[in-house]
Length: 210
Image 1: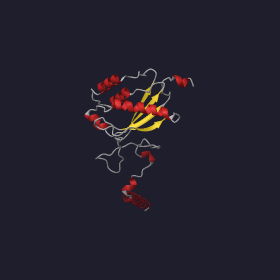
Image 2: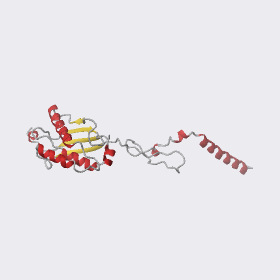
Image 3: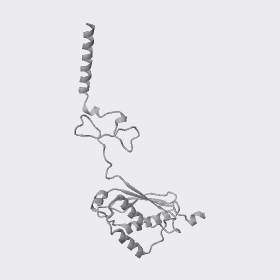
Image 4: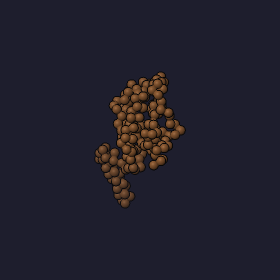
């Protein structure tokens, strides 16, 4: 008799658990512990990357690819070793023509082209440690969608120094654009925000004399 009662209790317990699981709405199944939450660059807790498949039963967490709108970041540092002499107008035009002979087919080639167009301000107008960051986007044909927007400039730099670097950056972009993208590269980079950070690390005589 005791064994029969034990068997009945086990069966009832199993039925109760099964009924409870069936009564849980699908929405609540997605509320899983943080350790199984989808991974994110902003998540400050453990995560569990996973993906959804056609043969997978039950809730799943899709592993999204990075969005196409994710920023591309480039830093251009001016040093004493790579400080170019101020080019004449003819040399700048020749360099610009050479840059457009070949279609840019990768992010690395685009960054190299942007670096090649940069000419820092003359040292008598420059400031050691100056930082200036802009943000812009390209169209498929290599033209900029809109004028670049300044997102950061060294706070302790005087207004006239900021203007000098702004003018130098505008001249570099004018010298460089429109970039010559391949068809695939144009489609991949079109509309994608690009942040370019300029850092002047050259030795400036009038700064060291202060």
